[in-house]
Length: 466
Image 1: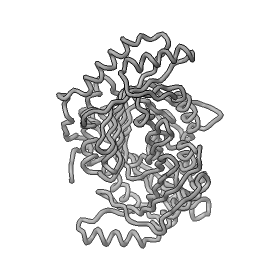
Image 2: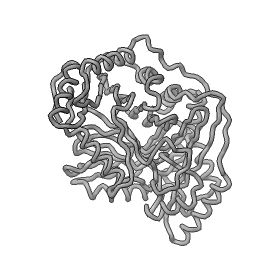
Image 3: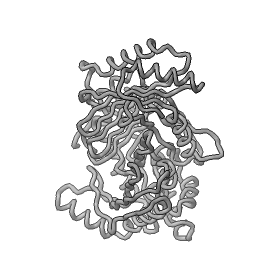
Image 4: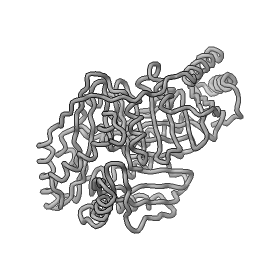
């Protein structure tokens, strides 16, 4: 990887083409520049016509970090291989950046994407646009980190390319995407009809799982269900993101387009964050609704902190994540007791885990070790996955899978894609799941999913603080 000083796009393209001639293969060139603040939703919407199907949106809960990708300079996905899908992505990413030329290494290139929950689960047509794993290197990327805003151009060049022609097109696109008169996102309501999918079958599956738990086959399994929405007009992704941003400030906001589908959500759950050798993971399991008043909210908080069923469910997650991270860390610190994490509609038991990872441990190898945690799959992991395949009557696709980004230094962050849905023109499928343990009650679990559907339902319906 070659890092150059800030220079013109044309000079960077020329250098990349020279490198391609010397090495005999295509080269990734990346040019980043500091710009005035641009509204990320406006930038996302500006790419709708030219780049629909190849857009990515990511906003972290700290409200200081946002990435928006438009276009696909390179797509990395997986196929049948002797190595895992996580390792395949890692290998291809390292190969791509090894000979890359970057004009500003401090910003660097970033790869965005994710993985399906379970590649062994039988697929349906619902998730045709999303393979087992898929990552984009965006052609154009807006990065907002605290008070700094950057615009990055990524391009794969070959020995035969014409530098002037390429740079002219890139500069023209840049001007169009960053125009000050680009329309801001206009929030709007969506009218839709709701249809619950196979509720009775889902509740029967809960009974089956409880029976298998009592028989000693496993200790926990997470069962998800689907809520289908139908509208007379296409759902507007930028508008949904706007309402999620307003209503879910403590969550990760994400949207990834693939083909004619968009996977979108606001998840409170970090899987893993890696910065150099420092890592941070989140144990988030066990939940209860928010109260209508401060007094009720406090009462529910205390109820959750002392509820045996939820504490047991939470402890499964803490133990599993701790055990997996201990294998790759020099040091690890786990919170002694769970505390409360409050989102707008729901509150969770929360335990943070921090550590110092050993050198040369790749972020994606950590993602592979942790996914799926007991919060999304169950415990023990292998038996829970078998139980889900047998009992769950839907195709989760990317729901509850890892989604996030990774940079050229191996830093990055992945969240667990819950509180999410798949949008396809006039239809949307929302997903919610519950952890089933020995003391679970089907009716209570059904009511919990109703709460978990609410963030996406509210955003799609165009309601703020409603």
